[in-house]
Structure formats: structure tokens, C-alpha cells
Image 1 (cartoon, helix red, strand yellow):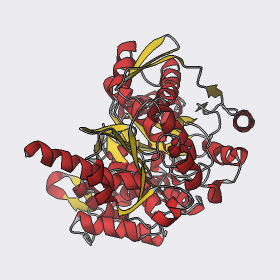
Image 2: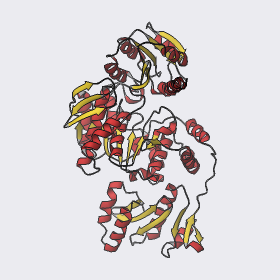
Image 3: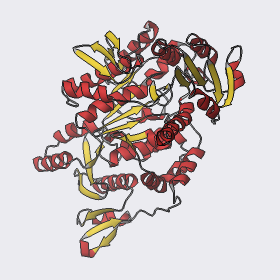
Length: 534
């Protein structure tokens, strides 16, 4: 008997098709109590199980047929796979033999069955977990193996109400704007974004708070053997942990940022309510293709049947690809409208979009486009009844959203701004906001696979006072290569470059790779803290 988990939006409709009114009422009651709910399908619903707080089987129903016990057994097995703690259930004469066969033990005094997960606690510290995950292959640009793993796990990602954000630049910012508005509207919101600036734990957050070390240890001890068995990559492990983390904490919505490309990215395992593309740039061409059209086709691989696709892209060759793919999948294509009346007020921006007058706490002009994309996504979901918010919550959420490392002021004396302009398109967007400043000093570093020659040409339009550095990362470009053909200063030790920059009398920009900023940012903030103490 082949089973599949219902997707979140399918559950209610499936329940409605049950003929037996008593069963229907019980199922609906279980569903409305927000239990962890698994459904079983062939053509129609044939079984369902409700798991309360990931600890108790609160409800088990199987349609009367010749395979009842087999279906019940498979549903319970799914539950065992997806729970981290002991799982218990009250005595039930109908299914007691099934529980016994699956290894549940009787607790006579409590009148219940209990299943003890035999978890070998190989990890006793988060440091061990971090090192183990980091030791796995970094990324696999394929999805078949991860799909097989998730299917065998019961496809838990189908239980999330998700938003999928792809594109070349601005994915994290767009995610953050959506998160901020939804949180302002009272929702519990999960995000999955990369890269990170402080700790790898930041890749998964709920209400902007990253997962805790002890919870990472729970998942690692529970699932390590399976990760090794299926040979998952580091990024696949992190996507899986995020899904389990979000489900366990019963988030209202989850927002997943694509890691690389789209079609074959590990995040493409989710079933979103809506998906989006920020823009298309010539980045990661060795994986995604060497033209805008090829990259657009790869990134549009996140489009799902009937699911709307929202984009801020303007290039016609990319839009033609999006239209073709959306038509193939019967998916509405929604484009961000023109932004009006952008005003720069030094440390904040205002602009007009649709009927709204928007304020953003940044002077990065490129954030107008990212926030407008977020608005389109939010308005669509509101219009079709997925969520609710009022105009004040929208405007306040956008205004209060702050995203570290994106034209972020980290010092006022001197004025020091860091920006993760990690590719040519990002650098051109950075230039639009930086060109208003005078007496500029720039510290720059980047990864080996970037068009650093073109990026450097862009920076030289701002100033001749440029220092190139190296940082500790296996993909970091050498200072010799960064400085090649350009009259710039070389300082291998970025610490020394930052220390010297604090003596500058004008504006200091530190830009390039986000991995570079992840090392630089805490150093600058600590310097500021020490200065205030003295």
C-alpha cells in the first residue's frame, strides 16, 4: 500500500471528503488543534495520524479496508522517524498488536504504550556537531539523493507553509523584509538564509532568533546515522535540520532562501505557497550557465505547478524565460511594479510603491527593489487568504527590518560601512548608494570564482584609495590576483587594514565577500566596544 504525506494545504480538503460524519468531525477537531498531522493517500485519504508536541500519538484513524493494519503500521513508522523524543500513546485495543510489533513497550500503571528511541549520544558538545557537519561534502548540485532521503523520512517539509526566495542578489534582504512584516502581524516566522555573519547557527531562525546549540545536538544525535547512510552534504543536512526545527516549534510560516541556483538546490525540496526571484546576475556560471537566459532557466527551476512566481527582474530575455516556464506549470507570473519618488535622507530612505509611502532604515538604494518584491509577495498571500496584516503592520515591519552586512553602519567615528557586494551586479548596486560620499577609503576582498577585475573597475570609480586583503577561507582570492593590473594597496592581514582605516578622516567602506565580512564585522564591533570602555 503506497502512502504519501499530505501537503499542509491539502489536509483540510481531504478531510472534507470523508463520508462518515463522526470520523469527519474527529479528524477536523484533530486538525484544528494544530497537531502534527500526517495523511495517507492513494486516490483519496485512507489514513491519518495526529502527533501532539512530538511526543504523543493523539489520534490515529485508518479507513476500513483489507490493509488497515499495514497502513496503521506505516503511519506509526513515519511518526517514529520524525520524532526525537520518546513517543507514547494510550492503550487501544484496535492497534495494540501493531504498537507491540513496532517495539513499543507497555506502561501498565500509566495505561499507555511508549517507544524509546535508542539514540547513541555520540556528540557531547556543539563544537563536535559543527565539526561533523562541516566535514561532510559542502554541496552537491543534484537533488535525487536528497529527495530519496526526504521521501523515506515521510516528506515532513510538506507540513510547512513555506515561501521560496531565489535570485542572484537580495534574497536574504527580501526574506528579512517578509519576516519582519509577518512578525509584526503576530505570526511565528522561520527563516533559512545563507551565508551567515556570526555563527553557522544563524542559517536557521525563528522570529529572528537562531537555533540553540543544545537543539542542534538533539538532531545530530538522533539522525547522524541516517545522514551518513544517505551520504548527505553539509547543506542538505542543514536544510533537513531547519525543516525539523521549524515543524517542532510549530511556526506559522517558513521562508527558505535558495542556496545556489534553484532547480537542483536542496531547498527545492519544499512545497511553497509562493516562490520568487529577486534578479538574475552572471554569478556561479560554472554551475548555472554563462548567459542570463541560461541562469534564469536554472533559477526558475523552483517554479511549482500552479504556484505563483514573483520577480523583480527587468531584463526581457530573463522575463521571456520566466513566462515560458510559468505557462508550462500553469503558474501566475507577477512582476514588481515601478518604484516612485526614492528619497535619500542620509541614514534612511523613503519611496512610493502602489498606495504606500515606504520608509526603510538603510541608505542602500538597492533595498527599495528588495522590499518592493517583499510587498508583492505579502499582498498576494493576503489577497488569497493565506495570511492577514494591516497597512500599519506592513509599513512598520518594513521600516524596522535591519539586515546585517548590507550597507550596515558599524562605526560613526570614522563612518564605516560594510556591504556584502559579492559579485559584479552586487557591486554595481553598491556603487549607486556609495557614490554620494566623498573622501572614500575602501577595503576589499572576494572569492576566487568572482569577476574581481570588473568589480575592481567599479570600485575605482569611487576612489583610488583601495586596499585589498586576504581572509581565512578556502575559496578566498589572493591579494596578488585581486591587485593585478590595478594601482591599489596590498595588505594581506585584514586586521592591519582595519586598524589603519580607523585613522581615516572620511568614509570607510569594507566590501566584497560575505564570508570576508563575517570575519571583519565582529572585529570592528569589538573595537568599538573597547573604545567606548576606554
